[in-house]
Amino acid sequence: MRFVPEYPEYVAAAVFAVGGIISALPAPHRFSTAVLFCLAVTSTGLGVAARGTEGHGILDVVLAVAALLVALVLGLLLVADGVLLVRRYGPQPVPLASGTAGCAVLAVLGLDAVFHAVGGEVLRALVVAVNATAGYLTLLFLVFTGYVIVRGRRAPLPGTTHVVVLGAGLDRDRPGPLLARRLESALTVDAPGAPGTQGVVFVVSGGQGEDEVRSEADAMADYLRARGVAADRIVRENRSVNTGQNLRFSVALMDHSDPGHRATVVTSNFHVYRTTLLASRLGVPVRVVGAPTSPAYWLAATLREFAAVLWLDRLPLIGLSLLLAVPVATAIFWR
Image: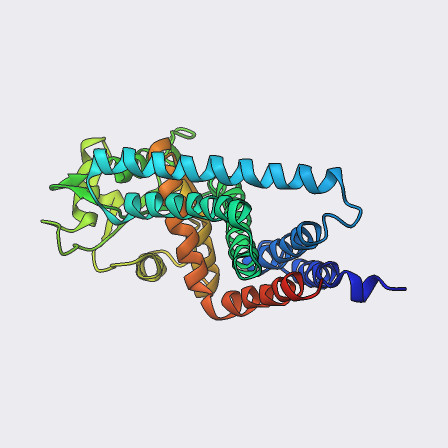
């Protein structure tokens, strides 16, 4: 049998796939599981691309065209989304990151075009490495987007006693559109029940940013009061400056006032997955649900969340991702 020496990329793909299955058994939603399966798919793609002239025929062409179309559509979509957001909100980090990512995807396609026009072994090696990295990251982002969509549609915890609303940016001294949607979603959890049923307690969580004139908690409390929520059903947590502190400080307040609480956390739908991961890490017993987001902002925000989740587990995820060098090296040198 000459399978192993002739097709090392497929061997690597099989190893990654087995690793993904083993990882999925105890924790199917662990992001490292997605990393391993994406490595397996990328390794398979490298094998097909590197040995397309050795019997793959039509399969090689179909996969190449599909990859080209996905990259082209994603690149153009990210660029268009970045331009739209910059025009609407100005040159802020999220829209700039979206446009930059789109330009990077299109640049990879440009490199491919140059290689097909010029050729050469050195350029070929560069193209293989760049395409493999770009394809892997694109695939991982698409899988992450699926995670975000599924998690963002979760329902509130049955019997919720407390609703924690995570802060977001203010528009002067009032909640901005993103935060207003979170507050409106939180109000739906407080839908009227049976006569005499006590309403939920709202925990509004968010400190004062450097560019804000007041704390997000104070702005949220005023918003809820204007929507008819009694002041004695609003608890302000105004010290937190990030999601981890939002969760820790809010749960501490609930534990102090009502140790038997059942809490639902409301954030934007693109933010649910990372918030759920952080809650699990912190041992915080909450259900995280998502509020709707403007379609124009959702893609850029999801890209930011993707980078944040990679950073959250940077050591194991980067370590696993570096294993991509093995099938890349075989595709370049094992011919």
